[in-house]
Length: 373
Image (cartoon, rainbow, N blue to C red):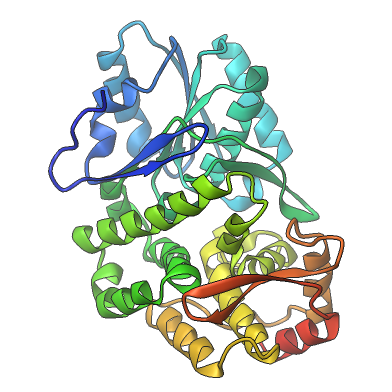
């Protein structure tokens, strides 16, 4: 039986072959009994990074030991940044599981943002052909996107998330109190993915975001919790219908074909401030996707302008960074996972709140949008 939620917390259920719950609200990392209840065996590995571990790992580890005295617990901490989401760091995480002596009922606890969640989830998917992962996201971006749905991966120099596996989590605990320590830039980056859900599924959610933009930027707990819960509900619905991204789930990639190309061409330099981070790149990518939709005659220019204005109000970039060649970005897109036999495939829209998959878009048209971007 699932324990009742404390007041002010939300629960979103993800159905499918491997159902799980997403719990959202302040103080969840302190709910050690709730987290410990998800650990089936006696081995657990906390995976975190050099920014997050000093803030939360000791308290989490101590609380879990108190809740489960027989637990054999270890920690793997990688350096922060997208550029660390590599096969080499993945190998180090597997080595940490080996040193722990992790058995097939072990659990990987992913404590951090999207990089940690993706890498830890992939390690869990591969260790002994699959052990449990519990996602403990500490960034808004991870709470509304990467911690939900079971897509795990690492990057290669030639492209983002090219090596990975589908591996749904056993549970997700999104402690919104961790967002209070999040740099303002990272909070804004997460809001890009929140906007995405309104753009592809529900224009009334865009109305809500426009009305609550100031509260979200101020870090208001109630506004953020509601935005996260609504975003997770949209994602849970599409993941349940299409767990392996063979249909509608691809809509979640709105803006990502352009965004991933920007990130890869910049060498994943967002963490150092020398390039756009993931959320910022997706913000630019969504505006470009909206403009490509207009160029193809699918949607009016007013919807693209509305999207641009909302993203800029949330402090996000909406134009391609200087110095990036349209031809180089196009070459990156050809290696993107979303390309298929018919050529480039984009998630575009007919209007705000109604997205579609479009294959075989002509290179010349894409280059025109990039050149104007």
